Amino acid sequence: MTFVRTYDAATDNHGVLRHIATMFRYPALVWHHRYMVQNFLRRDLMTRVNGSALGVGWLLLQPLFLFGVYFVVFGILFGGRNMTGVASAQFALYLFSGVIVWQAFAEASTVACSLIVDNGNLVKKVAFPSEALFVHVGAVALIVYLLGALVCVATALLVGFGSVGWMLSTLPLVMAVQFVFTLGLGLLLANAYVFVRDVGQIWRIVASSWMFLSPVFWEPKILLDNDQLPKGVVAMVMDWNPMYPILMTHRLALGGDDPCLGEFWPQLGKGAVWALGVFVVGYGVFMSRKHKYADLI
Image (cartoon, rainbow, N blue to C red; front, side, top):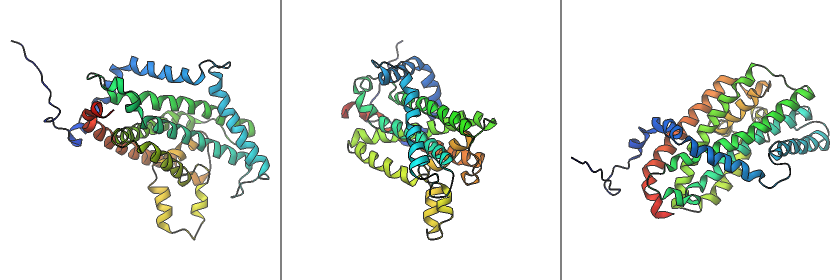
């Protein structure tokens, strides 16, 4: 006796809650297609340096040059101190550590936005797990971030504003939280982009505005010491901004010792809650609409 399995997209249950229940199978799915993920990862890394004289050396040279620019601007042109009175070299390191975190997040989320449409030839194949496409995007961004983090830690040691301690061993945990958060947000953006192509342009504007609302270029003490700002604004920026704890834990893991950065584990916990929540919603929404992608791209 032969059993034939049939599937009808019109009558199948596509509820978000139904697909959230399958979320725990996602790591196994990625592992099963690990060679595909590795190939995408290798291709994306090689495209960055293919044909260049320095090759992969550019991945290290770029963060070195970026830090040099920040050090000259904030260490020399600004007369030795930032707006809060912190020594310029320390502030340059603070600024650089925030920039490399944000660049990794912004790059991964922007690429993820159009990932389904850009890989339409793969998505239209019934057996292809399109939800696994997002893993290599986040991984590439974190690899580039790691090179910037290496420059940050090495420079901090050279100028005497940092030390290598046990906190550095927590960096993989912080990166994992950022990876899950970016993955969930990428699933949400990619789903929206399939239906409304303006999402790509809107997200670039939102990401730019979000960067200035996050402590990338400014320090938390600016908000805490400003009595003119309403408490609601301070709470929104510090308590309801998912990137706030992620940025702070990155800086603490890289050797930051400013009390205004907060305590590591509570900040990491907040970031993990945000990351898990965004991933659950993103995965559920993506999987519940996945059956429509092939007809729209």
